[in-house]
Length: 234
Image (cartoon, rainbow, N blue to C red; front, side, top):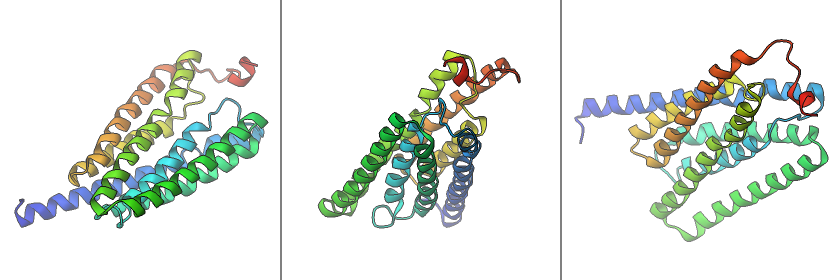
C-alpha cells in the first residue's frame, strides 16, 4: 500500500493521464473532418476506406460499455471518451455510406447493422450470464480485441502508402492523435492497474508511431501538382 500522500499523487497522475487521453481522443475524433469535407465536396469516397470508422465505432461501443460503473468501477473517463467517440464515428459512417458507390454502400450498411447487433448481444450476455467480476473480465477481453482491431485497421492505409509512395490517404493529424491518445491511455491504464486498458493502447502507441515514421518518410515525395490517386489508378 502507498502512503496516503503518495497514493493521492498517484491518483491525480492517473486522472491527469485519463483527461489528457480524452483531449487527444477528441482531437482524434475531429481529425477525419478534412477527409469528409473532401468526400462531400467531390461527392465520392474515392480510395478512402470506411473500415477504420466501422472498427472505431465498434471499439467505442465496447469500450464505452467496459467503462460503465455496472461493468468496471473507477474508470469513468473511459466511458466519457468512448461515448463521444461513438457519436462521431456514427456520423462519419453515415456520410461515407451517403457518398459511396453501390457496392461500398451495401457493404458498409451491412457492417453497421452487424456491429450494432453485436454490441447489443454483448450487453445482453454480460448482464444476463455474468456476475460483476466475470462481467468485467468478459467485456475487458472484448474491449482489448476491439481496440487492437481499431488500431490495426490503418494497416490497410499503410499498405496503400507504401504501394503508392504517397501519404495522400493517411492524414497526419489522424496518425498524431492516435499516437498521443494511445500513449495517454496506456499511462492511465498503468495507474489504474488495468491491463485491459494499457495493453491494447500500448499496441496503439506503437502503431501510431509507425504511421508517423511513414508519414515523415513519404511526405517528401508529394508534389503540389501531383494528380489525385483516384485519377492515377482509374
